[in-house]
Every structure is written in structure tokens, then in C-alpha cells.
Amino acid sequence: MTDSTRYPRLSRIDSPSDLRSFSEAELPDVARELREYLIEQVAGVGGHFGAGLGVVELTVALHYVYHTPDDRLVWDVGHQCYPHKILTGRRERIHTIKQAGGLAPFPRRDESEYDTFGVGHSSTSISAAIGMAIAAQGQRKVVAVIGDGGLTGGMAYEALHHGGALDTDVLVILNDNQMSISENVGALPKMLARLMTSRTLNAMREKAKNSMRPHGVLWRFFKRWEEHLKGMFVPSTLFEEFGFHYFGPIDGHDLPQLLQALKTLKDLKGPQLLHVITTKGKGYAPAEAQQIDYHAVGPFDPIKGLVKKAPGKQTYTDVFGDWLCDQARADARLLAITPAMREGSGLVRYSKEFPQRYFDVGIAEQHAVTLAAGMACEGAKPVVAIYSTFLQRAYDQAIHDVALQNLDVTFAIDRAGVVGPDGATHAGSFDLTYLRCIPNLAIAAPSDENECRRLLTSAFLHEGPAAVRYPRGSGAGAKLEAELKPLPIGKAEVRQRGARLAILAFGSPLAAALAVGAELGATVVDMRWVKPLDEALILDLARTHGAIVTVEDNAIAGGAGSAVAEYLSAQNIQIPILPLGLPDSYLEHASREQLLAEAGIDAVGVRTAILQRWPQYAPMRTSEIRSAV
Ligand SMILES: Cc1ncc(C[n+]2csc(CCOP(=O)(O)OP(=O)(O)O)c2C)c(N)n1
Image 1: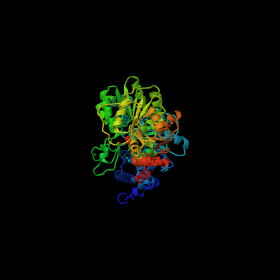
Image 2 (image 1 turned 45 degrees about the vertical axis):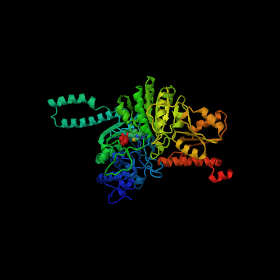
Image 3 (image 1 turned 90 degrees about the horizontal axis):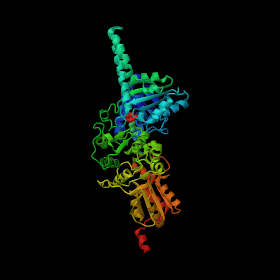
Image 4 (image 1 turned 90 degrees about the vertical axis):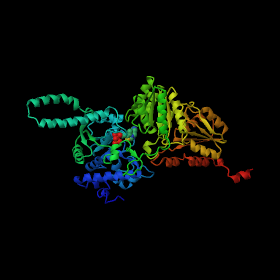
């Protein structure tokens, strides 16, 4: 239960209508309690932190002025939604966020009527809000809240372009904190900064004008100067050119100012854009000072703040980051691209060591991939570092711009397979399926860290498009070879020779396959390549074994197991196949281990599935062996 002594106001808010029963004068206190509660709760369980702190006042003001849930509030990305969840009846459950059975990490339509649109991926809010506003036919208000990071995504411009030409009533709030996960990049932050400057200049100008004698010498000089500067500093904004009425910028932590602006905008007709300036991490000094570190956090002591952890086990992300630096040193043609995920993709060191060969393009996955294609046309060897879930955004670019032209682009796909607490929106369940059907593209799935390094080298040296997909977190801790030594493309490795049953493992499930294979006396293969498959080996195994099991951390539908089955049926070979992998449903938020177990691709799951299908493969107990002898 929320402590009503510490949170006398917040503890009484179970829905926005409770919030609306407070007077405007009390709202700053509500906001203060909300912020303190947020800090306490997220510190307890971990989660997205800085973005939520930055929108505390905005969230209070929006739910106060608008009649949610009838009016629609659409959050972009949704990582800033914790204050929104707290005010909309989920206060007592906020400590369960991201955990199995707990609140979802992002807004979700089936969790609350206040979550109007499911999110997790960025730059969707303006499109969704315009769609809602069109369908609402003026019956309700619709507001989208998008960050300056979210606004670097191409979809946002497609929506502005379309929405600005309609007379639909929609309000877009640009929450400008100058940060994406890392510093926001490109021309947009500069444009937004110019808008801020022009505002300051306007204020200065008004002040100067008021202090002058009209029509004196100074006045005439001032008027000329003003005309001259107008064009330079008060640009007609991009938003206005698109047909949106632009308001702001205003201080997004000043509640009275926010309330006034929203009340005015609420009744205006047509597309409006309100530019709000906020500070990521607002109200918690360490988070304001270290905005990148506090974007998302594990549990921490709010008095001490985040403490530097002793370096843990090397992750696949670290392996990639180190490989990239080594490979870049070995080949000056290497250029690395990230769509706004420098930290998450392991590019921090590379960005410092090779600043001229490092490209953070913003949250622009489509551009990232076609940019790589362009570089490859001119003889560069680009590496696109991208999460499996975000590569979905650039699917056509991967086909049409890269693979169709057989361009030499390497995709380093992180967070492939089971991702965990970030939930369904961030699961890397589909990449093998959606990449496998693309002609020309080679696809590798390493089973340990050293193999990851070697397969990245193979993919890079391959003169054509190639992808290496690896999971979140660390593996068994394989020792890394310093040398950049490729593995042959399309060649698997038999890790254990057995009889009757052959287990073909793709990527990190190899460890589970080896454990089960040892117990059941099965042949176990580290397949390494999903495309091209080691067809000769598969043929040989099918001829010498009674059954085949495939294991992968990708959707079974269309995944690596499908590739094996397709190949064998094309060869007219009939052999029982048991495909293990991710189910035809979305994996919800839970720990990685929980999800692997739920999908049945950990050792217990693999063993159970095999023995359910073929009880005869059960290992003989000692007593049975004795009686058989
Ligand atoms: C399509 C897509 N690519 C990458 C991400 C990863 N991501 C999550 S939040 C974020 C930064 C968002 O910045 P902004 O919209 O300004 O919000 P802020 O965190 O600054 O409040 C990124 C890149 C994502 N969610 N979606």
C-alpha cells in the first residue's frame, strides 16, 4: 500500500478523475509526490528511469486538462509511461513492472483503457494519433507525446507530412530534452536549439522595444536590425511548413505554464504542435548528471545512486565491440553504423577510437541500412550494428537496397532470440525467419563468444551481404582468440558423435543440446550457419540417424528448423523431425531464463520434448542395462 503519510495526495489518486478533484494550486505537490514515488519504486525494481522523471509535470498536466481515457493520450516509445501508469490505477503494481506476470514495460492496450496504443518501438505516436483523430471525427481530443529522439525516426515525418495537410484536430507534444538514449544527433537537435534561441531573442527584443522611445534614432536602428535578424533567428519552423501550428518552446517542468498552454490548445482546430523543454532525469540529481546511465537501470539505492559494478562476464555485445575495433584496425574500409544504440550495441569504444568512421544516424533504421548500401557501392565495408527487433523496421531496405544488389554489408544483429524483461515489443524472435528467405544473404548464429568473433570475421570478409545474430547477455564464457580468424561459410561442426538421434543446434541453444545429447547418446551439431546450410552434413546425418531434432531461439515458423525440413523434403528424404524453438505467440516480459524455459528450449525443455515424442530414446537406467546384458 502506498504510504499515505509520505504520499498524502498521490495515495488518493486511483484514476485521473481523482487527480482532477485537486485544485490547480495543489498540482505541484501532486507532481512532487509522484516524482518521489517514482524514484522509490524504480530504484526498488529497476526499469526505465530518466525519461519518466522528465515527464512528471507533463503527465500530471495532460491527465488534468484532458478527459482521459475518453480523450486519447498516445505515448511515443512508451518508456516514459511510468508516471502515466501510476496515475491511471496502476500505482500499487508499478513495482511489478517488467517482471513475469507484472505490469508491461510499455503502454499496452490490453493492460489499461488509458493505454491507447501499444508501443516499444519509436516514432509511431503521430501516425497513431492522426489515425485516431480521423476515426474520432471530432468526438474526442487526441494528443501524441514524442521525444526529440523519437522525432529522428522517418515515420514521424511521414505523419507530419500527412497530418499537416488535413484539418484533423490533433496535438503533438514534442518533449525536447536534447537526449535520445545517448545525446541526440544530426541536424534536428540543432534546429530545435535554434527555436529555443529565437524564443530567447524574441523575449530580449520585446524587452528592448519596450524600453525605447518610439521613432527615435535608436528605435529606427532597432527596427532595421530586427528585420535583418528575423529571417535568421525566427525561422518559420519545419512544423509550420508542414501545416502544424507551432507553439513554444515552454518549460515542461512549469506546471502553471503547461496547464495554461494545454487549456488554450485543447480548443484549437487543426493540427497543433507544442514544443516543451524538459530535463531527462529531472528531480534526481545523479540522473540529471548522468543521463545515459540512468536511461534504464537495475535496482539501486536511491541514497547512493548507481554504483559502478565490478566488470562481470563478457557479453556478446562486448565481444562485438572489441571485434569491431580489431577489424577496423585491420581494414580501413570498415565503417560502422548505429541507429541510436551506441551503448546498447557496444560501440562506445569504437566511437572514441574511430570517430571519423562512426555513424550514429538517430532512430532511423531504414536510413541506417540504405546508408550502408550506399557506402558499399563505393567500396567501403559497412557494418550495421542493430538489434534484431529494430531491424524489422528496415526489412525492405535489407532486401531491396542491400541484398538484391548483392552489396557488401555486414549486419551485426544483437538481442537476437529471447530478450527478456523488455517484453514482446523487443523480442528478437523473428530475424532468422525474415532474413532466411532473402537471396544472397548469408546468416550465421554463433553458439559461443569466440565463435561469434570468428563468424563476424567471416561475415565481414565475405564479399556480399552477411548477417551474424547473437543473443542478449553472456554465453558460457568461451576463451577468445586474439587473431581475426574466419570460419568457413556454410560449414557446421559435429560436436558430439552419437547414434539414432541427431540434434542440430543453431546458435546459443547449443549448450542445452550438448547437455541433452550427452545424456541421450545423441549426435549433436553446432550448425553455425542458417544460410547456407551445411547440406552435405544434414544429408549424411539423415541417412545415418533415425530422427532429427532442430533447436533454435527463433520462431519455429519459418526458422532454421524449417530450413532443414525444406531441404530434406526437397531431397525426398523422409525422416521424423522435431523442430524446437519459439512458439507462434508473443513472448511476454519475464527474465530470459524464464522465457527460455517457457519456450522449452533450455536443457529441461529440449529433453522433455524429445522424450515425449520418442520415449524409446530415454537413457537406460543402470538396472535396465544390467537386465539387458
Ligand atoms: C525503432 C526503435 N529504435 C530504437 C529504439 C531504442 N530506444 C528506446 S528509447 C530511445 C531514445 C528515445 O529518445 P526520446 O524519444 O528523445 O525520449 P527520451 O528518452 O529522451 O525521453 C531509443 C533509441 C526504439 N525504442 N525504437
